[in-house]
Image (cartoon, rainbow, N blue to C red):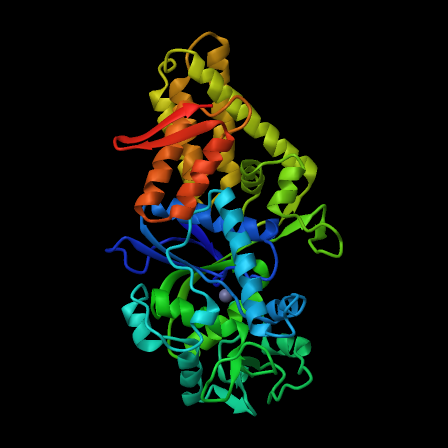
Length: 477
Ligand SMILES: [Zn+2]
């Protein structure tokens, strides 16, 4: 498998940290929960879901995606809550809980698998142990204040008033990930009013509490962590001092990821071995924003005539490292493609026969599908295999022959990237069975939220499930 590494700016063969164990550790920066997610957030979640699924064919994947539930934007949003003036803390909690729920619901609607761990920033400010964490990681870092203390001891951080800052000039390789020199960074650096930085390049590890805002007791006084420290601390805590892959959007390379590297490595942890960044999403060529009225949520995309699966197909059509541009026309096109797939699958289910002498051709095609995915997640190329298949299968059907073998292979490949073909002519039997298997697996791993989402999704496609002592039975409405 080859993956592009943003750190070396090269395509590299992927070798996990511990090839013997066949395990891969992956950390992805998750949402800051102050609003409903837009399609940019969902693209990010789906890119890493596909990566995880592709890796999972070869390795056991430990996937950590954090939740930033304390942040200026959350506090700002919480001030608009009706009872914010009485208890801003409770308002912050209400806001972050509400929008984390909205994030989970959107991901469940897209069939995106839950991470192995989803640590919340607010639960990792102070040291605590977690049986699910990495033993080696927790021996070094249990909470964000542990890491800040280590940076102070190593003299790469300093206290100024009740704030703590990281001394960027004391970390020699600063700028390596984002490929910038200190001189370039210097010109963009600023000292905000109230900050007591020694150097405009420095960034906050700990910020003194402001009246009414969420805060924690620390050796430096009451306050809250800077944003960057949570990911360094939580990745080490759950994955250990060194792990395979760190991912996020291109907009996070600087300063967020650059600062994550600085904090972790200055404390003595090798940290992420490779970095994966995905391109950003625009809407009709413009950056998404509420003020422009182009803040596209999943709900809005569905109202535009799309569906959860059409949104995913739209994402797959662009390579993850490239920018993607959303438009209602492109979504409608993806929806039409899905309907074509559905019709073909429906049709293939009605004609007897697996199809003529195709096993070798099917195996070769399957190989090229997975080869494309393993070549830096080339989803546009992988998708073209599915389209070729459908066209070849349709020709067989038109000539009166069966095409079940092609249909099954198509479904198997689509399932490997979390894509399913509901809609138009109803779900084909094999697809229903696949979803039921997926639901059973979710229930076994106690991911009841996902199991429930699958049941609901099937129900919306007109399939009713009945759980019996002998397993699940299904029928069409
Ligand atoms: Zn992060």
